[in-house]
Image (cartoon, rainbow, N blue to C red):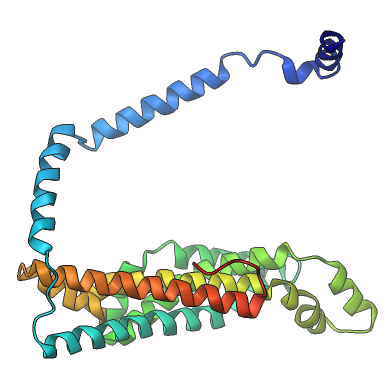
Length: 279
């Protein structure tokens, strides 16, 4: 009986059980060949990797035990780390504030003009197509060294990212609440305010919280090029070969990012009501 059922299923869905040919094998072989060529072209060397592992082990040995120096140095590192968190927070808030109205224009179901939507989306592509570090170098030459350039660099890069994510969330929203608002006499702005935004608000908040955590790491990197924060202190210690202090600063950054992650999870649960246990 089972054999007859299998035969009936195969006959009914003959296309699904038909031989796939050699297309899959050819694609796999091409991908593998491209991967091997990429390793060769980029100078991958297993010998260098093994030799470098020994050097990496030497650096790790020199980093322990972590050392923060004197009390003055500890206060300087703590202040710089707080500055890094402030850069990430202000940059994220500024980007989200600017990106939200622009994302409404860029969303297919909320835009006021398809032409304006096209140019807004291309603007998002341009902003997020440039790395945050490059924006930091640009803004440092515009406004000078310091955390202000770091805030502007993070905000500029994140406007493009937030604009894309926010507009896609708006486009994926249910249109029935919008139709209900319009049917009850509401305007287009009312439809966006009461029909779309309540739906997408949890998603937007979650994305903003994640980017705040990610931007804390980005703010560390751009600090190395002069945008303020703990990155500048880390760069100075690496340049002077103070590896124990480098280790301490890295631990400070890791603890801070973990704390922000746990805090963001709790905030997201409190605001959104998701049943995701905090890590």
